[in-house]
Length: 406
Image 1: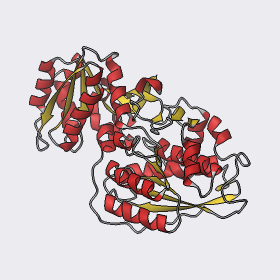
Image 2: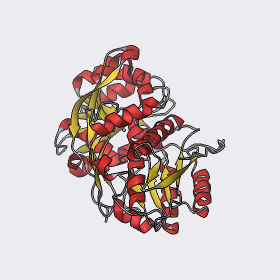
Image 3: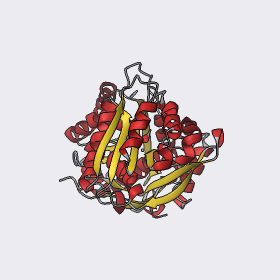
Image 4: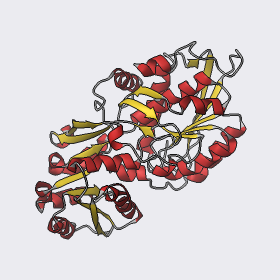
């Protein structure tokens, strides 16, 4: 297996809904088992070229690192350490998209021009939405990474995803109050495109289920957040969904705690990566978290254990988006088992595929390619640098499944 890193670019990085929402043995038998399917190379041992685009640098580089570490561990696991599928080596080229759609499209076009039939990756939703049409136009398989935008689901026949989508995040948040019908849900966010997108998403998901959705939006420049915490408390919501990013996060959680919001209602936000845990300070144990993943959330199932061990073996650190990379690798290997060069055969193999992943049993929904998967509820325990998530509930894939895209 050969990796060809790309020279970093200094292009501007775009924010994504993946970042916003976060701040949201059957696989072994079917993926990478030699002799289970014949490749499309007619017995040839020619290498299969796979391009992986991710944020090695830029605003989302920390998430990109988690993704690529998971991907490498997943390839090793699914090919039983050989880097080969049915005798065909996987020639993997890694490109730094920097989170910039123009860079990613340029890289993808270059790879496609060199005969690559499989592309995977990107943390950034904006990048994913540019790569998906390119995949369809050129009839190549594209497996998006942590990019959470719902718009990637059902966008075309050649596009899949290896992580969750925003709908699953918000449905998990809503689960903290049971049936949302008749409940008052308040979104606390900054008055920016970031915050407004979260308000719209909560209205679309929980409002459609009968919740009354309102919002408190603070100017992004605000540093005294006490007045906004007071507004939240005065509204007496059944659920507060917090979508916040930036340097004032600790001040926000302190204000919510001091104003008694955390003790008067359910306050839910997305559990981001390990580095974010100290942001909550003393308020951390009083907040409920929707979780896409954290190490151990999968209950120590065999695939999760293999992922954790594989990443650690190479000196990496398992985190929020490790499963997105690992699952993408399982999907790549399963696709190559069907064919080494026919993207339509690869698509057919993945469409409707059910497999054991790091999070548990997952299914690629036939038709729109939504990745149906478990989601988690969690709480932070401990103090200071010892803060760690504790699993409080696992939601089944059906409980948080997004609507079918026609």
